[in-house]
Amino acid sequence: MNQAPGLHVPEPHLRPGDRPDFSDLAIPPAGIVPRPAIDSAPHDMRELAYALIRVLDDDGIAHGEWHPHLSPDRLIAGLRAMMLTRAYDSRMVRVQRQGKTSFYMKSTGEEAVAVAAAHALDRADMCFPTYRQQGLLIARDWPLVDMMNQVYSNSHDRLKGRQMPVFYSSREAGFFSISGNLGTQYSQAVGWAMAAASDSDPRIAAAWIGDGATAEGDFHYALTFASVYQAPVILNVVNNQWAISSYTGIAGSEQATFAARGLGFGIPALRVDGNDFLAVHAVTSWAAERARAGLGPTLIELFTYRAEGHSTSDDPSRYRPVAEAGEWPLGDPIARLKSHLIGLQAWSDERHTALEQALADEVRAAGKEAESFGTLQDSGGIPPETMFDDVYRDMPAHLVDQRRQAGL
Picture 1 (cartoon, rainbow, N blue to C red):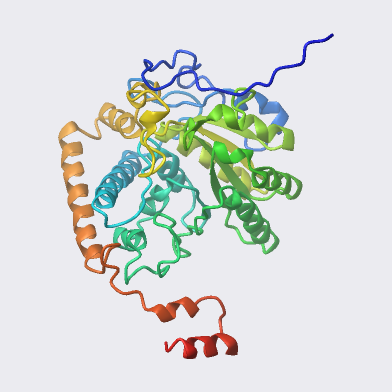
Picture 2 (cartoon, rainbow, N blue to C red):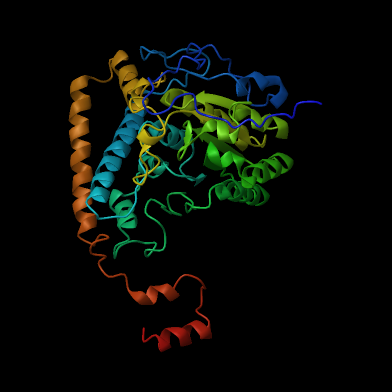
């Protein structure tokens, strides 16, 4: 009698109490991955789905064909946006602990994923984010006070308290409404890009999804339509090693890279060091140029690490070693870009410290202004009649009657 096959249930290599160990990760030297022409066929660059595109080495020196050769001023702008994102996150977690909002999600360690992409895209391109892409708004100079108002659901919240905290939305900033139903933004981004292309609109779309959400059907529906219709869209997978408390193996990372999933759909696939600002900027620019040339979609896996908990409701020490974030071999995106700028003699420790203080002051001032409009403890009074707004352009008679009956 043949033995029945066993069922494989993926398990993380390390558990709480274990010593952090990333020795199993293959981290190639910076600069060794070739940069193909934008019109290269997906099967001719298959190896890029399994490689790891890196520009900055451990000493902050840029190497290779993917080096974007950005000016020091542009690099400093990127550094500032990442630092401002981190300062904003830090304050919002503090106010959550004070009970002024119910929920928050930090992007610590992942700032380059959003900020570098925002700097590589055109300001008018439409972004379809998932969690931890607040750096897109900050890089596009969206007011911090407006973002805080949304987190507080106060009287100046443009979304009128209808979204969870950090589920931002801004048509003006090209930031599509975040959805708690993970994966939906991929299909939305592809649909938007198809519509733009059919209208001869020069803008492109970019979407972000977490590694865990690649197991959702929406991921595969989106790739099918993007491939069939050659939609001008960049599809980013943020592989930060953890989907809430489930590690990436549950979503299939033991079998292949997340980037490799694009190959089966005939989509070019790139795998990039997500903590390398220059590398993220370079691959996003490459994919954007390809999309604008009418050459279709690109799938990008951003290999990074979620340094903090999934949210303020999560305790990562319950499922991974406490010191693991500090041992991540690809380092910290802010520290790495700082090191690169110092090497160019365009930055210094003194300027960095001064900027940290200036940004902390900026966030503090924005926080005081936002809190003057109310917090979770004191909502500031969102008018109840707003529950009838924004569904129809012209309010139908039955809603007019319901509002009258409610005395509003």
